[in-house]
Length: 488
Ligand code: ASP
Image (cartoon, rainbow, N blue to C red):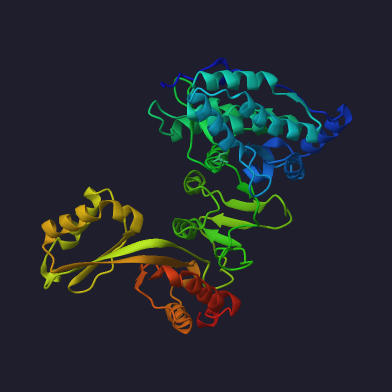
């Protein structure tokens, strides 16, 4: 079914259909305003605060969020996600929206689905005792679903509505992200246009709620970022208002030093650089959407990961650069399973100029990106994601034969890669030694080693089955026993 242009009245320059009225008394409001006016707006510190789905999943959570925002007048621009899970097997509102939209596409009656979504919001509205009626909004949404206004339109309504509820609760101005977050006609995010639009729009607005995750294309059609994309919106807004800090509130007290599924109660990293975080998140540490780093990074704005359920915890600061030495030699450990190695051997390989390029070109032609390429005199190994490789396995092998005529090619599967990351490792003696003796003690065989000259990380490859044991051994030596610091 073709997608209608969703450039409805709803998405145009129009205030939301919902009627919002804060239930606080006049006196309360006056007091709030006085509290704000004690700080001249121009001189105040500016914070952009983004709250994730679990922080906004229920009225109780939403209350915590409002308290956090009200406790600090510099928290001026608020980016909400859609309501997330209230308990572990709950469904996120975004997923309910996708499912309702798909059901409409199959021609099913979606009344019950829409009602179920509406009741998620109503539960929050009732619990907060705010006077806001989303009836008209839901009538439009149901109609747009029936007319198949686009899956992105559907998904975006979670944030769109949650922003209205939060703005009503806080008494902040509501700005539909469709007005300020710009995508081009092909759906590509337009960074500079958005930056200018936001700067202009927010010039005279001191407090606002801007829903995360979506924006609009030039014809007004709604476009979303990829899942988890409210983090990106927060970062974009922080850049536009030149925030002093971008606070990203979630349900953990910061970036963990290692995966809590492997290490129970791992320590939280207090300060991590953007580069370290890139290494850690590439290898599986998930705390922030990958793309959320870039807008703030270009302005040197730190990101502070905070916990809505423990607002007194300082969380993790993500910074461009710092003199602060990490508590341990390593900043963090991350990794995952599911890699394989393609080992290529050929006598006198090292004499053949262009050997590596020709091999890698075969991977490129098959649309496979490589992770690492350890090599010896007559051997060249390419490490890739096993599932990606398996789809194209025979094409790649025959391609390599044709390209470089190797003596042998053999495959080794079921490998895990572990990244040991830390700016504190630079020029420190004995770090790699500690990693390998820890692994030897834990009886883990190391299949591959890779350390760049930046000394920011050491990557090791082990068998999938040894993955957890290896992570524990490394954590124990550097964190539990805190070895390595004395080698400074
Ligand atoms: N609500 C969207 C999702 O579930 C976006 C976000 O939460 O950042 O992916």
